[in-house]
Length: 342
Image (tube, rainbow, N blue to C red; front, side):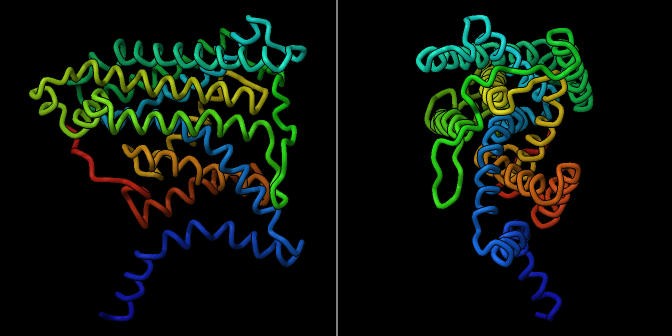
């Protein structure tokens, strides 16, 4: 093999790993030379994992829908926004506020989580039934445009609901309050909330898809809808279930986001949805583990960029990473070959 061939083979094998390690290694070396320790980069990465877990919940909705009907559901970010609105309005409605006791806050937020998940799940099912199902046999551009249109409709619903300015949410959990620290890594209440909501939901989703009868129906439909139909699987019900689950995850992410950021507005779904979709593509769209991995990686890149380079450069840094990963691995980090669009 020529020298050029050996270099290309080496880059194909290790280039992606080197690429992902560039930012933490560079800033880790900088921290060691300036501060004498790695505390700052460790805090950046931990905060990135915490932020990324919210993106992972949203990304799962994108990857579930794409995996089963090969549709990029552009309205999914706005479903997440409705989740934030619903959760914050519900806990205010039942009287959860800054003066509420710990038991009341826990009960109120748990109830708000359930309400937000149910509302967003049903909203996503309604969107599929009204806007996507009638176009299932149409050219793929038609449902794509419909998804964009539905995104704008939901944005305007949010605009009418809470107005055009960002709305403050009571910081009922004191999100940025430190709970404890380990080796200089500060763990806040917001971090614990993000992990406490995301980890159980991801485990439950993985178990459902891999072991439950309906989960196996989803996998069969994703591989070949016609064959699944011939085997007695109700494809319409399975697709509706997929939208229901994706919407419920977006609702959960909406509640965590509202408590984490303490500010919500009608346009929040655009950027979060774009980043989550990027996470799904980076991880390998259609792959559940890939969506979670992509969300965590983008969260870390976002946090490092915000803290070290400047938030105005973060979108450019995130998408530069996406482009480079696509160059090295077009199917994404954990991507699999999927059926061709019919």
